[in-house]
Length: 616
Image 1 (cartoon, rainbow, N blue to C red):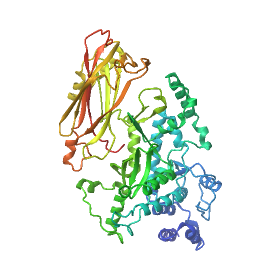
Image 2 (image 1 turned 30 degrees about the horizontal axis):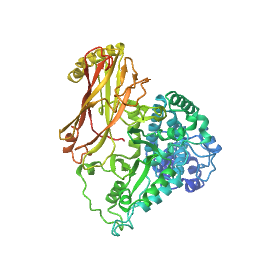
Image 3 (image 1 turned 30 degrees about the vertical axis):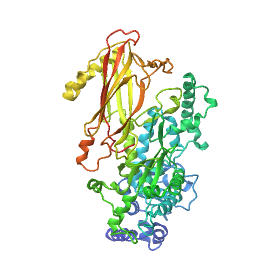
């Protein structure tokens, strides 16, 4: 009898591999009593999980939706599956929009299959379980960092977008758009017609299924965002205290929204940009405008790309380039009917990493359609790298406009690296200087255009002693590298004023450009021990002269640095890595008018002009 049952179960496993769950598997229950009893077994549904949602059969965790029907809830709260088996499908009426933003342990493989089926139906299929797990994890890490750094407005914009807008109809419209824009005829009438169809990749569906962009106005979830409203009120008070006038008469709501891009931003002189993750419909509308209202050469440049994020002033765009994915499909399938082979040279190292994970290449683009590669591996790799940078302190919260009455309103994620190999941090006689660079464009024959950010503070006596002890400990543990920091003389003064600057900008070929001058951005701040400064300028400069809490921060541009384009072959990597900046700031103890000691030079430790491995 046992042998007979095992034989029947084996038969069912084989047969079930060729049947749709509904209606075929349900009809199979009527074929025999044995089949009827075995349809709901764990072994069958684990195999169906493996067949329908590859990767889901390794564990019984599955997407959880906070808007489920009563039948779904009932099926999830009982360990015994109903017989006959009923699939929760697209035709079942749902209680509001589905919200997939977490994973939940399931009691049975049947429940696991149902949960993945609900998500698959919602996005129109084509979503890999591993991508969804990665998306949930990355978003959870990002939101934890946002809350830790009190970026509540950005966190609230994600709360409002959970489960809204990323559905099968939206993704179908994206693919219809790709079918049009991916075949823009070349100048002279070439191209067009036929070819491999471009599909929205699994990783993008996963990312948008959890949080469908950033939504700032949604009355249904406004109650969850009360903390962000309190932060807005605090910013208003800070602006008015700084002399910015009443915020009631100014359009601060749109300003706050502008600086609340979840992917970060910067402000250097009149170049200001913060990257928002766009809701899918908004991204599609802007994508269509770029594809239909731009010159022919621009349309050809962005053919086969999907817009993912953008600054609200359209200074910068982040796109997912699916053309390499199409090349992989052509290579795997032996070519696509009606499509001519492209006649473009490919660099060797690009061939090796082309379309990692088959999820496309991330591209950043300026408003002049200058494009540069952020990295390969699709949007999930970008999101995971962003999460890691927020957790490690490489990216931190701050006022993107470093000073002035609007500084509190401009609080967001700064893209200037605050820690790690792309930044420098050194203290000279209590003056701590941190510096890093940020690429403002990604494509140039004359070298990339760089901005740099400098943060200066005068440490207290206690902070100086702690830093000296830490430097000595690091020297003992790390040898020469730490010793180089330890030899910087440490001392203490109650206040000192910046007098002049000396910069050395070194390109990839070792050519050095020296810049000397009085002050920095027209200011000679008077630093106070323990943090804070008095905002003073050179004679005739219009500055407040008021005490400002926190570090003195300024941002400027180095201009184009030769040889800092993205390396095209491995031999170029070492050469490009030599581009850097370093220098000194001269300080006077006391004030320039009433010095209390001789001037000294505070070191600006060397920091590179180098692009991050994967990021903006």
